[in-house]
Image 1 (tube, protein in one colour):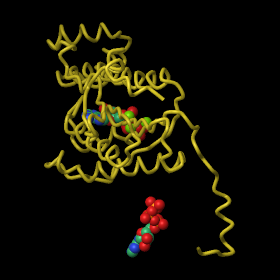
Image 2 (cartoon, helix red, strand yellow):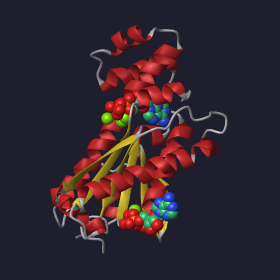
Image 3 (cartoon, helix red, strand yellow):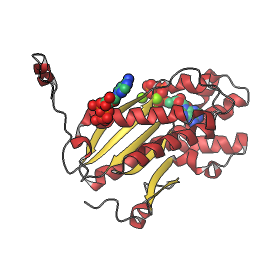
Length: 240
Ligand code: ATP
Ligand code: ATP
Ligand code: MG
Ligand code: MG
Ligand code: MG
Ligand code: MG
């Protein structure tokens, strides 16, 4: 191995291992996707092509890294759950976060054209990436519930907001109309003004997407991870 007088600078690199025996969650999120989706003509509030592309990029990451047991995505974000026992990159935080984020981004660009055949990519998109460890099954379930509740709250708001805007209200007025409304008020508004029953909204929009491994294949579902049923049906997930 090359050994030079400059070699010592490596000692400035700090170790960054994450805690052993915890689930490692890597969450990536699109940088400036408010603008990105605008410029690329995404349908509002939900562009199915965009969600399909996110799911495809997530599958590419899970295909590459077998230690990911589950992934959950909504909007411009995806969370990857790495098993407790994993020794991927010796559990080095920046290695894991940067490689997942980079592969996700390149897969997103690689598959762009098959999801948006009529829309040329206007500039290279970026995703940020962070790593958080969760020590207990309850913490991990609560993490996933947190993201799924976030999906539901945003989707309900955005469904109302865009229904109002598409009906001719200005964005400012739509915002004012929705200000201080509760969830049940929003559902009522959708039904009385737009004949939309929120329960009938597609589950991918309401709940986001899960990528699971079933018989070594990757499957995408839109299950409710907050309910006990999901976990009872898949007892393997939360074991040590
Ligand atoms: P930041 O860089 O801080 O993450 P951001 O603009 O990406 O800024 P987010 O809070 O991540 O802000 O929000 C993502 C935005 O992308 C939302 O405004 C959402 O409406 C839009 N978006 C993401 N996916 C879709 C989709 N499939 N269809 C329509 N809009 C989408
Ligand atoms: P790791 O994932 O651990 O980084 P690696 O295969 O990328 O594994 P590196 O030590 O980073 O290993 O080495 C990069 C390799 O890529 C080298 O073997 C080098 O020969 C090859 N390589 C990189 N750029 C070029 C180039 N422009 N032309 C030819 N070979 C290249
Ligand atoms: Mg963000
Ligand atoms: Mg974003
Ligand atoms: Mg986001
Ligand atoms: Mg290399």
